[in-house]
Length: 137
Image (cartoon, rainbow, N blue to C red; front, side):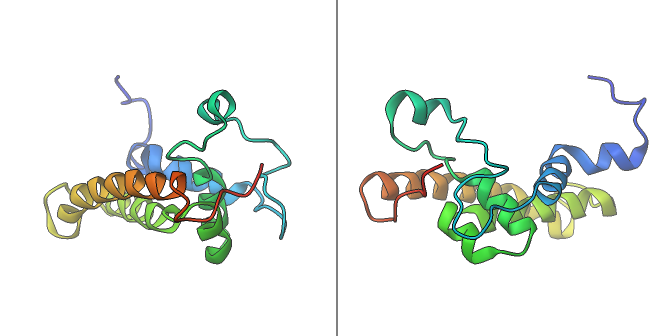
């Protein structure tokens, strides 16, 4: 896809930047509430099976991280804060013009794979009852 019509800053901001921007703009769930903006879970997997998917709670966790509520973020998804920090690092590297494989950015790909592996482990732990269940929502 040709994105040459976009200013350089927008291309550098990328999808990760849009995710972080959306998380910052959406109000965090009220204390004790389990939904963002009162919208129930839209997870198709959870709706069909009744089980949480690997990413269930991640949106709420990222929203809480963007608002500095890391304790609440951990309650929604244990990997929300690490994903938030990896996304932030990717956006900062892009905005600063750091090329992949150069300096700091060379650890981003291994970090992304590690987060994906941990996502599978956290999902399995949640399904087996080793992690607290996801707050309803």
